[in-house]
Image 1: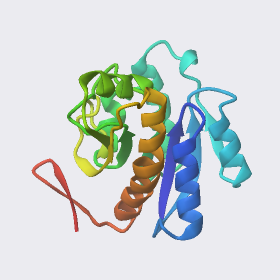
Image 2: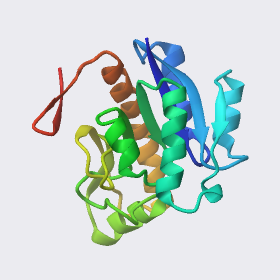
Image 3: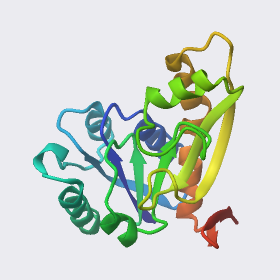
Image 4: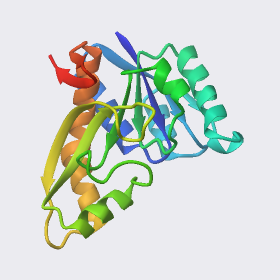
Length: 207
């Protein structure tokens, strides 16, 4: 049984999707053993407590830079004996000291079809604003491994939704979350926990 540590910064809707998936048996051979938040008082911590999942808070504001913060996160991950780290709305880019130590063991969900609308500066509603401004006809989400470059790790799963003419960023965001993120993230986590993701030449394949 693999230990899953989830990193959060906000409301934790993707965390809830993972909790529900674990309870319903969608996630096989893995369990959420700790939720780490980057700030106090976020609702994701309540979601964890409501499901008897241990929590830790490592406030980003307490650290001078991303390197010192990443070292604190790395120490916590090691203490928690994390087999898999899931970034679920975690708003800090981790330094390579973490991504190297947990190479191909950190999964993130990005609310667009990488390589479109991704990289530094593309997060939250900004992603959907950019997609709508460009006039794309489909959008979606990408579940990928995390490396030292923002949104550049190996892609595990992708799913799409149609973009409607009268969509707002908020409406598109909701459609992608409900139809893609909340389904594919638990699926990718389960595949990892069952050792069904193979890395060949830096690309991820499902066995």
